[in-house]
Every structure is written in structure tokens, then in C-alpha cells.
Image 1 (cartoon, rainbow, N blue to C red):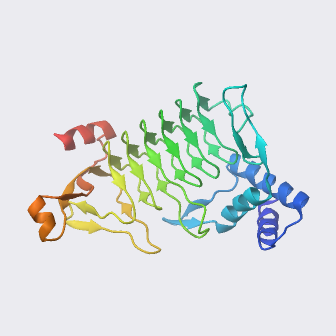
Image 2 (image 1 turned 135 degrees about the horizontal axis):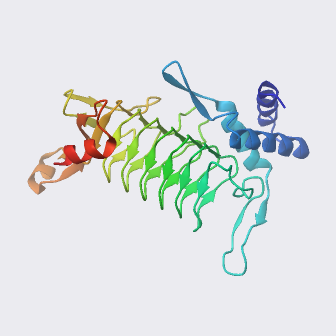
Image 3 (image 1 turned 90 degrees about the horizontal axis):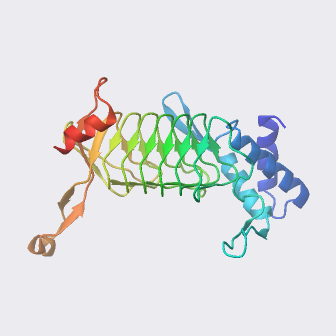
Amino acid sequence: MSGSDLRAAVERLADLASPPEAEARAVAEALLDALEAGVVRAAEPREGAWQVNAWVKRGILLAFRTAVNVDVSVGAVFRFRDRDLLIPQTTLAPSGVRIVPGGTVVRRGAFLGDGVVVMPPAYVNVGAWVGARTMIDSHALVGSCAQIGSDVHLSAAAQVGGVLEPVGELPVIVEDGVFVGGGCGIYEGTRVRSRAVLAAGVILARSIPLYDLVRKTVYRGGPGRPLEVPDGAVVVPGSRPAPGEYAAEQGLQIQAPVVVKYRDASTDAVSALEEALR
């Protein structure tokens, strides 16, 4: 099925209150195959911006609607149930991908590029796209439809949120060459632009302003507008005084991620981070 035919079929079936089961399952499986092959994406870069492919998300939701719960337990100890069209990938990963044994799950409909390494345990959800040579470290999460670029490092316990609904909403986007430190959280469609560096523990979301000490500005998200981290920014956890007299009396602070410097062409992520944290 061509890309245009697949899109037309998804949009036609998704509009039906009760789509024909056999046809809907066949179309959903074709979409999941295309997602795993990297032929289609939930969102993709176009002329410097990112475009949501809402029909892809509608197709994933169609898969959830038409699938049924099945037992996918392993032995008598590890008991699981999931939608039968979306159970974890069971075929061997492409030869250029390394998934280290130890509890990792790559769900149906996720794409892993050549040279990706996944350390256990980690979870990559449906619709996610992970670019070539990216490292996903232990206890990291790549959420549904999240877009992770090439040569990215997701350190241990990094959480990259995802989004299926509303279908027009941008997922979290982490562009090429980004370093994400341990325990970071990136949520609500945040876009981390290329070569940015996030120190351990940085939390980014649409509702959290990002303060730039270098450019003396504040980056904010808003309705229909995600938070964006600039190219090459080095971001560390920070805090700012909480508003109000009571907060001042108690010395309360609110977390505030801070851009403390920018990488130059000759500085790798680790060096830039070490210098910033000094």
C-alpha cells in the first residue's frame, strides 16, 4: 500500500464510528509496519519547522480501537496483557541496532535507526522515531510519537514524554546531537534543538519558563506553542523566588531551568557541561 493510499484509508476508517473490523485491522497493521520501517512518521522536519502528521496519530488510535486484549505473559511469573496489534516487537531488531538483554521493551510501531543502542531496562513506545547512532540508556523512556534525532544521548532515567491526543499536537522533539543528562524530564511537546546539552535533573515543559543568562531573555511555551530550547544551549537546573509575600517570608523557590552558556563548534557535550557546572 502506497503512502497516499495508506493515509486515505486511515482517514476514511478513523471517521467511522464502527469501522469494519477486518479492514481496520489490516490498515492499522500496514501503518505500524510503515512506522517501524521509518517510511512514515508522526511528525517530521520541514523547512526548519516541525509538521505533525495527524493522520498517523489517528491511525495509531484506530489500532487501539480495533485491537483486543490478549495475554502476552512470559511463563508463570511475568504476567502481561496488551492490545494485540500493539504488543512489543517480537522480530529481531535490524542488524545495525543493538538491544542489550535485560528487560527493554520496544513497542510495535516504533522505529530505531541504524546504530541505535538500547541499554536495559528501557521503554520505547508506539509511534516513536529514534535516529541513527542514538544511545538510550538504562531506565530511559521514549514516549508515544516522540521524535529523537541522530547521535542523541539519553542518559539513565531520562523521561521523554509523548502525545497521541489531541492528534494535531506536536510530540516532544529532541533534535540531532543533543545530550540529555540523567533523570531529565522533557514533556508537553517541548522541542530541544540540535546540539543542546541538558544537565542531570533538568525538567522542561510548556508551563515552565526557561531563563537564558547569556542572551538575557526568557523562553516560554503557551497554548499551541511548545517550549523551545535553542541550538547548542547548555541548560542546568536552577531556581527563582516564588511570588508573594508568604513565599518571600518562607524563602520559597520555584524550579527554573537556566541556559548558562552555548556550545561552540569545537566543544563536545561533556566538556561544555563540565565547564558550565564549574
